[in-house]
Amino acid sequence: TTYNVGVIIGSIATESINRRLAKALIALAPQADLALTEIPIKGLPFYSYDNDGAIPAEAAEFKSAIESADAVVIVTPEYNRSVPGVLKNALDTASRPWGDNSFAGKPSAVIGASVGAIGTAVAQQHLRSILSFLASPELSQPEAYIHLRDGLIDDEGQVTDESTADFLLSWLKAVHTHIAKSLSPVE
Ligand code: FNR
Image: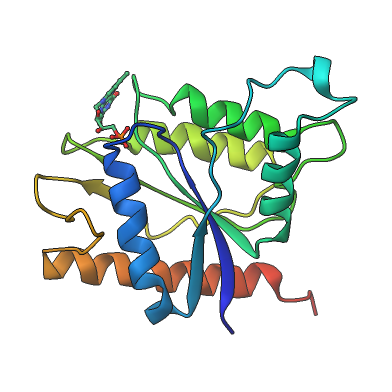
């Protein structure tokens, strides 16, 4: 089965290395029987429950994109040892209004790229806490911390190093298995 997976990129920077990583994943995905499509967060207003009664169009569109995907992959940078504010805002937006949490039961997987060798581990741990509270079944293994050295992924999303490409593909295959398990009806 080919699953449709939404991709949330936790950075809105034009030169984002996590966008570069997401492009690589999108290109490799068909080999893992996945179709990856970005769910953009750049246009989202700041979340406030003041707007719960009349949800902004961008927020409603974002929520329905998550709901119609089979699963969500989140590609996150680490900013100050946590997730960027723009990503937390997107997750808060998806979680509300109360009783209308778009992540409930939605399988998810997290991955991230940093310029530092140990980067994104702490941010991913925070992200896992949030997804757990949102009742999203997460892929727990393999973990994926990508040290994005210069030139590892080119502008077109082509991975230049074979072992990294192999690792990303094996991670995507694990995502596929995780989705299949999470979506299969309980016996
Ligand atoms: C960073 N960076 C960073 N890296 C890391 O490994 N741990 C961290 O805590 C931080 N903190 C941090 C804070 C802020 C405000 C910025 C702008 C950057 C460096 C970060 O890995 C690098 O800028 C990446 O390029 C960020 O990913 P995107 O936004 O390019 O996808």
